[in-house]
Amino acid sequence: MVASKTKRSLAPAREQGFILAAVLWGVAIIFIVAGIFHHYVQEKIKIGIQAKEHFQQQLDLYSTEQTLLYTLSSSRVTRAGVTFTRQHITEYIDVEEGVVNTDPLGDEMLLDGTSYLGLGSSAFYVQDLMGLVALNAPDSSDLERLMANQEQNGQVWQQLLAALQDYSDANDTLRLSGAEKYEYERVGLPSPTNDLLRSEVELHRVYGWGEWLDAHPQFKWQEWLSVRRYSTMNLNSMPKSLLIAYFGLSEEIAERLVIERQKNPFMNLDDFFLRSGVSAGLTEENTRFFFGNEYQISLWNNGGGQAEMISLQLTPSGPYGPWQINYKYRTPITSKRDHEPLALQQTRLFGHTLGDNR
Image (cartoon, rainbow, N blue to C red; front, side, top):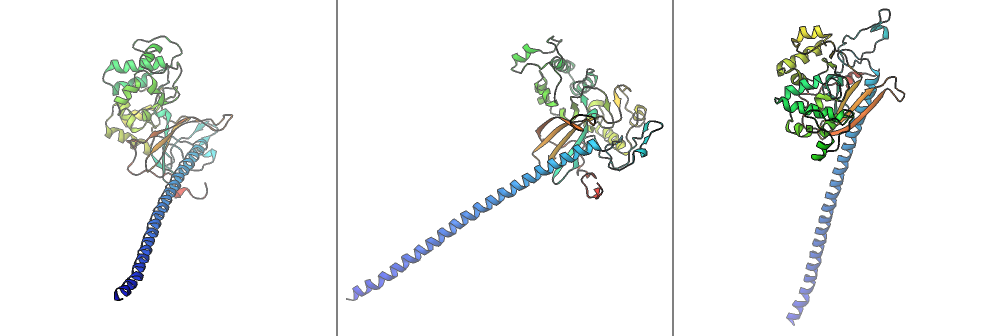
């Protein structure tokens, strides 16, 4: 009799225990589901924030690009670069004498590849193509000089130049040490175009050049070369690294030249000789001290990734607009330009000093 009462009293206790365990398991499952959902939401939020940041970076790059295109096509240029000072035309042009005053005003954005801050996290540089060595020039003396300073084996750089000439000339005649269709087929390269190079990247398709450039990473082809058709060079816009490579200067002398021309850009060849002490191989025919109408623009985000390279030609009288983009391509950011300051410079174009009147 007592045993039956004990069994009846234990039954509700067991039921309550099962109920409590079920409740605890249910609560645990709810917490697990809530944790999973919270993690899912946090990941989605993280992805959303990253997408927003990426979109903002792309917007900053695009806005910086469009601002630069407009500025380069509409602003006045002095011997130092693009000026943002508003002047009446009579302030810098003597109509009676027909003389244009190109003296610096002190607020110029440099066109020698100096890096600047753009909008948001973007950065950029503008490089006057007259400050670079021309690949498509009929006179290859500038390229020969550069190659001779970078490749000690004269036979090697002469073969490279011969292959480049065979690639771009309009015939299939094989130059001594050059390369035509047969040589390209033998190494599995596309046949030469028998036309001028369309971009600096195309140099990798020229017989022998791809291997040589890969083996010589110190040869900064993107910073030193352009596909211009004229060999004259602007000594006020040559990058510091090219001053070193082209003239065989030391780092210290090249840095001094850059600082000197930033303070007071060179006016002519005699002025350059006097203040630089560099004279070898320079003539009035192959040097200039003012900017051309072709530029290379590079845009990137300070966080890294890829840079967009743009080849720009100003066409103020063109039927389709004041500028023409010859090509665009993206390239990995492997290193900063060696003449870039430790902190990117701020130009009035994007700075708070710009004011409300522009």
